[in-house]
Length: 420
Image: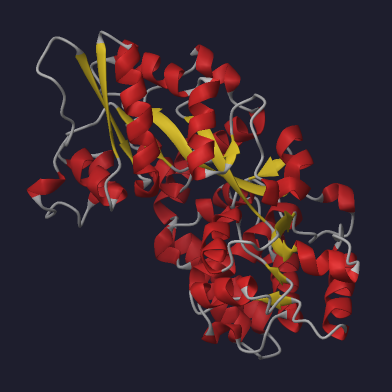
């Protein structure tokens, strides 16, 4: 019944969405992974084949379909479960976990390989605190400020470490006749990139849980974040809501701006326009003290074992294999990103300025990973940035609180009842 609450409106999906695992008709244990990353299908196929070549008793199938989350939700409704799911660390994971779909992996040796920062992020994604571990964080991404290294070196511009240094840099860049920042706010989701990167430094990492418990409000917690994301408009090209993500990527690639507040996931798009561009990325300097900065990094891919899998021992063997250094190296070489596992794994050259944060585990999750999609926080931020009225910030923050209560009312009620 919990699962059904999450899957309404999906029951009419085609029967083509049924389980797609297939394997040789022999006595091998069949293990199916469904991955939500179709862009990684090729490397997962390679990993799958390597596993099958080295294991006589287990046959692994990794499926990476388009619209994987829709397919998964439909299969969950039908109780047609794969053995393992490969998904992101976001509100979908939170919902599936809350529905009791995932096996507790506490005590499994491969969890010792996971960096503590990403294990902490997973625990914070629990709607209601649970005992144990229910996911194996695998690869993360990072967001801050992408910048043109060549322009910075040419002009002698230094990477800023505080908000004051950042705004001063923007002023300096503008005086040099260069556009400091570009944005593509027509695609509303892009407003969340600077928002998240600022919020991880200016608000508590568990602010959403605090609000759910009635201990805080977003009006107070997000006041400085709202103020400073609006401050970026002074350094962004005019009318950024007229331009989309692709426009911003193209403009940045063509050196029409020195910086872009976006995540590392945008680098392939930039390189498709300008393959030779020297791209750097630094941690968003939203704070007044350099030591208060945190890297905005979230779990891009993690593995969860389905509680109803009949082959638990085999699934653990599969995950243990996926956590081997050579397999991680294979995945990173194809897809890039940041390893969530401990080890001597390469950090992408473009993220060199973030390396100390990555290696020390000074990372905090994207705040929007906690926001219900129905709340449309990105659209609210866009509307706020377009609002030129004197009380724009107050209206925005009040609406954020109101919409949060509206779309989290059932969870808030549950927490209140449990704490009585």
